[in-house]
Image (cartoon, rainbow, N blue to C red; front, top):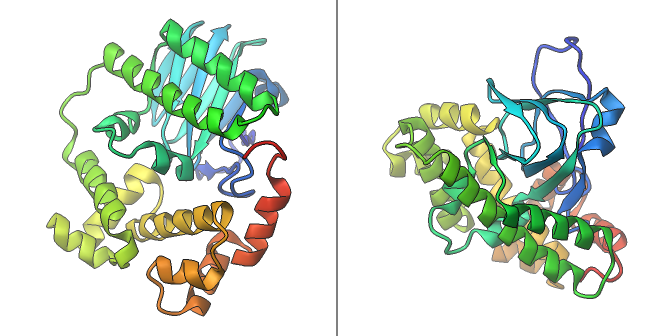
Length: 297
């Protein structure tokens, strides 16, 4: 988690990054203690959001206040906080609060949310809820596995990530059963489902708007309000996530990956990827290889 104390000096909400945004896939997920970063900012973390990251916080002792998309929530020992990508959040913890923050990138979430029903929709809600005992146990296992370098570490972390999100979804539903989603929220969910189905076909915003029976302008406005980025950026981001996954986890050549992703011209793919990631596909692949834990795969 990357925080900055903005102390009223900026009027805009900042978007911060972690692996998957700035360092690109060096690990399955990230896990750290709440104190590790919070103590650097006097236990108060200014409003910010993560464009491509999902965070789960668990308070073991202490407490404080969370602000999630403008709503204030009291935090106490045993509280679970679910922060989906794009949602503005801020925290003020009491001193010496103990707990963990698990951060998962979109690349991993895409792998987990295959044929799991409405779980992704449920987890798209920012929420504070009591954590069941199973979630405490799973978070502890995530922390222990993340901190070690045991054999099959990445495989175990992937499984624990899915289990953790499952317990989070249950806790949120048990504490605050989902009401009928607002029309705009439903529209974004439908857009994300369509992107998942058609991103390899390189549909444009107009194509998605037509399929959703809304105007491209309205679709982009709703997408930006819900996620912090435009509809066009959501479409591009899904393609780039798939590109990063192929570069990180396969030995396919860059040209082959470009064709697999529906690009007619590998050079165009290279330019698009470089613009998104800040480095070329080959440089990205070399960076991932250099940063991957030796026993993680």
